[in-house]
Length: 601
Image 1 (cartoon, rainbow, N blue to C red):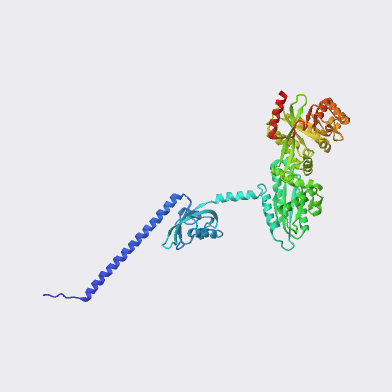
Image 2 (tube, rainbow, N blue to C red; image 1 turned 60 degrees about the vertical axis):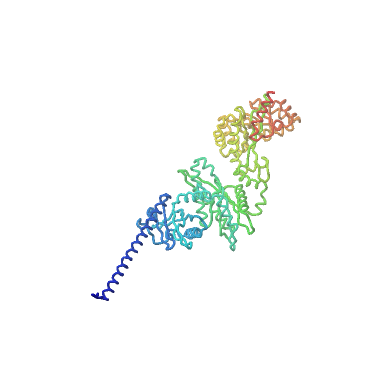
C-alpha cells in the first residue's frame, strides 16, 4: 500500500483560505442585502411622498424622522423658503424654519398628537425664509410609524401658505376697531382701552383725563367743498390731534366730526387744561384744501378720573356734560367737569346725551295724523309727528325732547331723517294725499333746502305732495333768511303752511311777507271756541285767509261741538282726536279705506 503524505501546514492554510473566502462572500452578500433594503426603503419613502404630493395638491410636503430630528421637504417648498433645491435632506429639525414666537405652539400641537390626544397635528404659525422674511402657513401632519413600544418614529404632513387669509382677517379686525377714514381708534376700541384704564390700579398721584371734542364749522366746509373736501379736513384734524397729544395719549374718532382724547399719566387737571388749550390753538390754525383756506373751531369737554370707582359710561358722560356746557358758551371753548357743573344740568340736558344714542339706535319713529276736508269729508293730508320710545322711560313727549334737540343741534339730523322717512311713507299712499312735516328754526340755519331735495329725490315723491309746516318762532329768528328760503322751496313746488297761528306777536306781518298755502289755527283757540272771544279770533283768521287766498286748518278738534263751531266759522280743514289719533305707518292704509267706505255710505 502506498501511503499518502500529509502536509499539515498546507492543510491548515487551505482550510483557512476556505473560511476567509466564505467570510468575504458573506460580507459582500450582507452589503448587497443592506443596499437592497436601503434602496427599497428609499423607494418606499419616495412612493409615499409622491402619493402624498399627488393626494394633497398643496405647496409644501414634509417628512420628519422623529428619532433623529431630521426632516425632508419637497423641492418646491424648499425653493419657496429660499433654500437650494438639492438640499432635500435637511439635517436640522423643523424648528429652524419656524418663527421663534410660534415654536412653542407648534411643539405643543405635535406633542399632543404624538401622545394620541389629537387625530392630527394642526397648527397655524409663521415660517422664516432664508432671507429672514416670514409668512403664515397651516401645518398639518400625522404620525405614520411607531416602534414596538409605541414610540413615534416618523411623521409626514403638509404646509399651506395662508398669508392672504391672515392678512384679510387682520384687516377685518383692524377695521372693526379703527375708523376707516382717519385710521384712528373708533368708539369700540376707545371703550376697550378705557375699560383697561378704569380697572388698572392707581400709581401714586398719576391720573387720567378723557376729553371729548366737537368741531365747529365742519358742516360749512363739507357743504362748500363736498364730501371729499370734508374727508380731507377730517384727516388733517386727526393728524393735528395726534401731534398735539403726542405719545402719551390716545386719539379716537367717535362720530362724524367728534373726537375723543385719553390722556394718561397726568398729575392733575392743569395738564389736561394745557392739552385742551393746545388742541384749540392747533385746530384753529388755517387749513388749506384744494387751494381754499378754511378755518374751524372746536369745543372741548374734559373729565378727570375720580378717586372713587367709576364706569366707562359715567366717565364719558361726564366729559359729554362738560362738552355740552362748552358748546353753549361759544366757539373754541373748554370746560372741565365738576360736581357743581352736573348739578346745574337739568333733566333736559341729560336727555340730550340719551338722544345721541337714541338716534344711533333708531329709537325715533313717526306717526301720522289725518287732516280732513270738511266739504268732501275726505283725507287731504297726514301730518308726520315725531315720537321717541326711550328704553327706560318709555314714550317721551315731543314737548320735552324737541326743545332739547333744538338746543343741541340734534334736530338737524332728526329733521333730515323725518323728512326722508315721511316722503318715503307718502309714496305708499294715494297720489292726491300730501304729507306735512314740521321744520325747526335750527334746520333753516343748516341747509334745509338740501335736506328737502334729498328727501324728495330719495323717495321719488312729487314736490307738490310735500307740505312744510313752519312756526312763527322760525320766522322771528332770521326773518330775511327764512323768508328767502321759503320762497326758493315754494318755487320748487313744495307747499308751505304757517303752524300755530296766533301764538306769536307779529303773525300778521309775516302773512304780508310770504304767501302761505295754509294757516293752521292753534289748538288753544279751538279748545275755547265756545267762548265769544276765541270764536271771534277764529272768525277773523278765516276771513283773513279768504282775503289772502290761504286755506285754514283748525287744529285740536276733539268734540262734536268744536267741529260744528269751526265749520260754522268757515274753516276748510280740521285735524284732531275727534277724527283720529296719530297713527302708526302700518295703520294709515286701513284708515284711508275706512274713510272711503264711510263717505260712500
